[in-house]
Image (cartoon, rainbow, N blue to C red):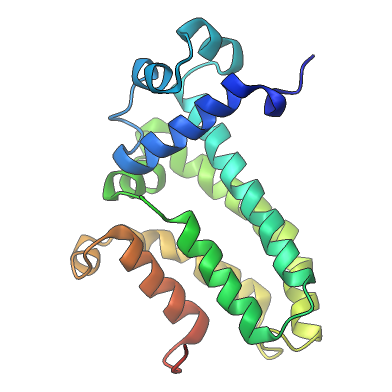
Length: 194
């Protein structure tokens, strides 16, 4: 069977769906809209995906898997700790471009569509993969040695609840600005940085 990632139509569907989901969330986007914007027939869509939920899960997997690879590449670089953290923050910034409040609500909070539990499971599996990298970074002095990685990952999981706090998110002009405030606080605390 052909490798889907080498298929242009498959990639067009993934990219288009990501763009639309990030902008409008999951519920407001239809299979018809995705197909039309991707220039792909519905028959081709259903050859690759069982339904819109299957596509959303595939998009999320694809984004996470790419981010994990970039994370591993950053950790393997021969750069300073501060440069690694700067690049990790840039990775998060790039990954949050065009994210809407609807995306955050649908993907992280709307249990009836089944995405929050899927995202939680995928995130837990991803953290398990990254745990060794985190511990190696601690041994090399890139990350604090006095912190339990499990604490860091647990706190990172709790960020999903904070992303959906309307009162707090209302203080910011965009979801991306809000997410980056959280990331910077999470990475630097109150310490000044460039």
